[in-house]
Amino acid sequence: MKVKLFDFEHEADLEEALNKFFSEHPKIEIKNISYQTSHFAINGEQIYSFSCFLLYK
Image (cartoon, rainbow, N blue to C red; front, side, top):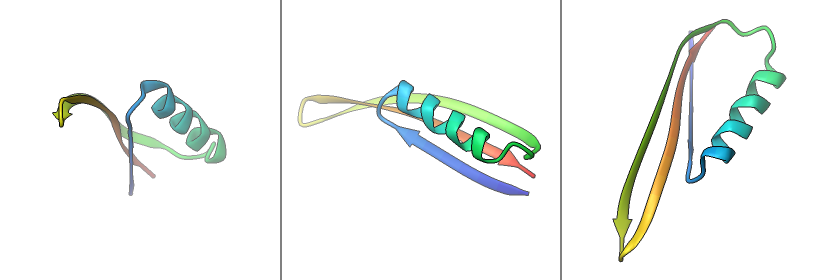
């Protein structure tokens, strides 16, 4: 089993990274995939986080 974590400030970047990973590893067997969003503020600026946890074989 292996784990891959993805984390981006824009959902489109996360989507692109996942699609690239899957196209580069077409024979992986996905065991679990989890998606999470969060946001927080730093110095009054809103920051978003779009992340994905991928457990695969």
